[in-house]
Length: 338
Image (tube, rainbow, N blue to C red):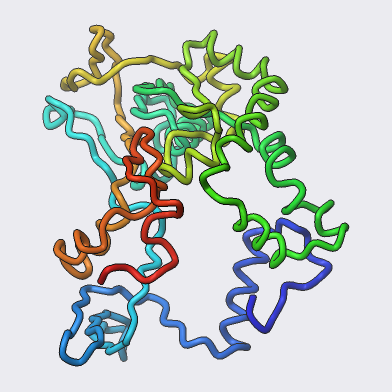
């Protein structure tokens, strides 16, 4: 980090506790003006003063809350890749007598021991929640509505990032600043052609994994042009699962799998469009998130969000990444039209 590099004896991939402690220490040593427990409730641009008026609510005296108005010249939205939870409204959901919640609201899976759970979705959140529920004794069925890219961490790291981000890279004298510069230097236009052969090799190495998933009925893809996970992430930020164990549970039929669209929800079940009825005590909606500029609409205004335009994606013309071609990530790490 600026002015204070990570200790040289630390591993290439530090633990969450190491990073958390480091950030806390960095804030104190570098005297960073950091406000924890603070919520931004709104912002507006003052055209005459050429500055922003930003309202935040933070902890005040005696445990109360106080509203503070800030007047910065620039406003940075570092709110993450995703917007708000995308909660699908299925016919009949209001009649369901069990519990329905979005993956963002999923808490302790232990409370669902012995319960029947239907998880709608088949990407990262769906797999992680399904595995956690199974580990805690729930009877889990995952509903896959569209194909998913599956990748194990080991070949993904070895074949795509090992030369830049690994203990071997560190031993060769490559520091993370140089690695970041090299990684950022590849033009997005040529990336698909560079990644496609890598994913051919991953498919070959993990042929047994993919065969097992397909035999279980799981629908797999490697991107519309076979360019793999990174391009899918850059284009749409969804549609994949980095396997940390749930795939084998699907192969072993420990996590049940059904494919299809949800037709309706009854008092006690999810009904698919082929008539399949899945009894449930809990319905988990692993249905993703909206676009990140939803935050701009909420914190500033819908007009500003529209002026800024779509965020993320390259304009590749693939699913969820409409053209025209941008050549870079839309409205990321640069001044916008507002």
